[in-house]
Length: 205
Image 1: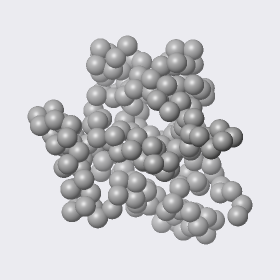
Image 2: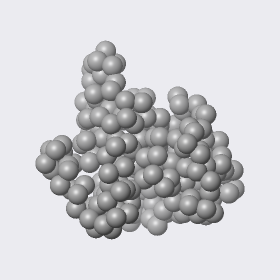
Image 3: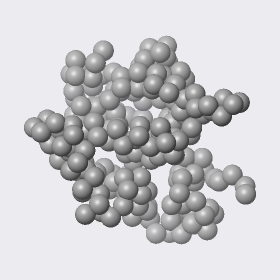
């Protein structure tokens, strides 16, 4: 069922925000694996999710350019963080930040992606929502290319960072200073991969 065929409810789904949503897709975004947290949160069964495009949970409030930036990065085999508003089966929503791992076969060929998603602090949602709304409004009135051009200019002129850097820094700002200091002492990759956020600890050097 397409997202736009569902009744959209302006209500956040109740889910355990301490948990990590995990999914695996092929290079085209087809879902190959979904953990129980994923299925419970999006209100689809695992059987319903397998074999479906990941866009099955795309919320109509999300501008297309956000996904274009994401896929462009993955095609360059770059890890990427994205802030996404997802749609559940009953039309509710949930916000997550996503961390990607590039999956390769023994010959080094990319065969898919593993995505880990965790809940987004309210402060981040408040900051990103008006930006996404502007991008979506431009997309509807002027087209996807105009939205993409505006986003590129916005990041360059007003933010001075890439989207990925922007996302990481939003979290840096919203987390308590005490927690941030503790994390920085534990890992040198605070600004590089948010490993602490998705895995709880970094891999030993």
